[in-house]
Length: 316
Image (tube, rainbow, N blue to C red; front, top):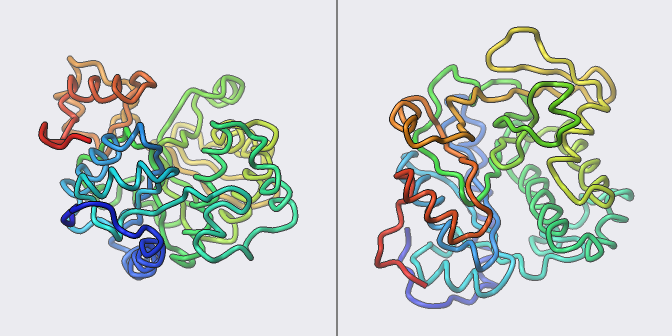
């Protein structure tokens, strides 16, 4: 962490954050694959969770490349005050029509269908705007890291434990999307017995993922939920899962030829009963436990599970 002495001029942080993304390009293309551009997006209520997320990355990886996008000035200020280095802070306060693509100086990626979504992004409601802005940022960063580069978007309450082992599903060499497993939306879970969880997902930069994300951003105008859009679009693309395979491995049969890999639950746990935590610590790469929605309750739950790394003195 860099020294956090007060409030920086956050306009300058935009250029610095793009530099971070550019610097990670070659690392993301490294076949050894430990270095991924990690991203989370938060509002002011989730700043301490974002700090815990960053501390877990710094503990798990030798030199993690990460960005924390803040959707209000207070979040950016508090992150700086807590010691998050300026290059890691990305001010997204003005992410409205065009979202982070405009903030980061690359509006041209928006195709016609997605521009329609961008113009009406304010009509998505608070939660819908959050998902739209987050996936818009993912798509921009995928263009920044270049073909084959990796961008991992995770919720701020995710906690990273260790780098993925060589040969694990996390390092699948050809997958376009590597994600943890969920149970929502119910209709997709009923069909597949699992779903793609957007709270912990690694995207590989390719024309395929850029096309899928453009369709997802378009579909969000209707669903207002990124996980619903991603999963139902994959259903529409006739994703077929290899029988009996661990990890679960799927390919789309229609349209864009996407390859999807789902992480075994022991490596990305969602269910985190206290009595099982000792065993899960031996297998988990990242925890994304089902915890209450309120930020303060999330912090309490993570403390109880020994997944809280923020020193008691770091208060905002």
